[in-house]
View 1 (cartoon, rainbow, N blue to C red):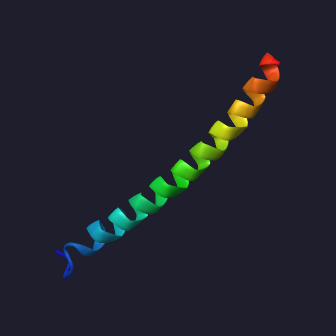
View 2 (tube, rainbow, N blue to C red):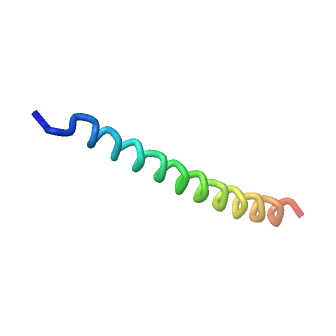
Length: 43
């Protein structure tokens, strides 16, 4: 048993929220690029 039962869980929560923020940034960036390309394709 670990001396700090919540330590790993706490660290995982921090990692998850960081990954989520990075993922959202990346998604927005990809979405913007996709919109630019789709607009070029239509015009």
